[in-house]
Length: 308
Length: 137
Image (cartoon, rainbow over all chains, first blue to last red; front, side):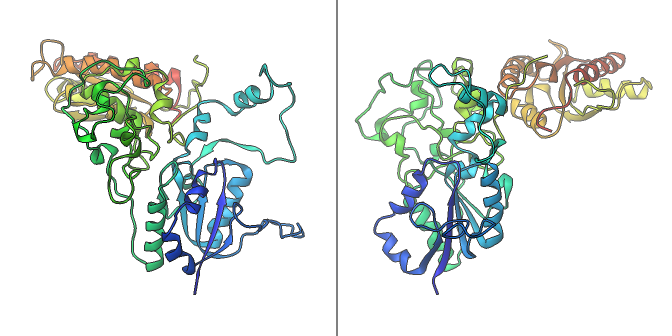
């Protein structure tokens, strides 16, 4: 019997859905074993019944639930709870669902500041009142899915690689345990490390030495002075076969899209340590809190309150 | 939000060679000081990594007090100087974590300074009471 899958998207760009559609040939192996019962991005299945005849939101029962995106508003929260009650296994897919992702950078501001910025005091739009009534109200901050309901598996990544998604799905179909390795990007990075910086911090667009050469001839980008979030970021973006991280392959420093190594890790502290160990000065980095928590703001970034 | 019913929890790192003995002296001399501190004995103030301070403050403590030997008195010769250098990094991290600088304090307390230990603790408790509970609580 086919495994029923329900999918829902919250505060997200849609990139993780593209990953599902981008699986390619392995999809042919998986597809016969799956039956999608709810997935707004590819199928017409409405929450209040097809003609809006139902009074309450409803998601069909399923074996596996996949949620992408962070929990931003009341509707997201209700749907997350509804999904949890309807499925056996809940997967948080992508960094937004796992750690808040890019939308969680908004957690640096109070919700009133965000409303003021968007609906008033913006020079290019007409000022107006904050919409109320017809749209779900925003929560006080962006939450990661695991902060709202129990999550069985976090699949990090912005977006998750297709083969990690397929790997998790195959293990689930076979009933074998699946875990994302707790290794850092540096562990899978082939560049040369000597634990000592050769320069001071550089701006991201300055030329990288050794660009174009094989990666194992290139000096670690961080040691060259480029801010690379590799030490505090989970490996896996290169694919499940453990090849080099994707950004490094393109001679760009890691942006941290796979999030921290553990759910309770503190990338800000880890990055301070990593920078000062090789002799770079963290004070020179602008907007440190947001830079180090770029994809992991839920529960880590806090609104700046007026100092007494 | 300084309220009278706020009872801060202050984690205190005391170095084995000076400050812990100083705290012990305060106890054996029956000097009174507020019961808000929880002392952790470490070998040297220089071994307390900034991570531990941030972890404490983001996991329930309202303040962190670090006590070490006076400069020049360190049993390991320069451990306390390391703690002093780290205080700058900690100040920077407190700012990044949106915490008030008053929540961290580095003090030198020698083994013979029981009254001074009690005074430092009293001041620290007052200081933390003024800034209120940690926003991470």
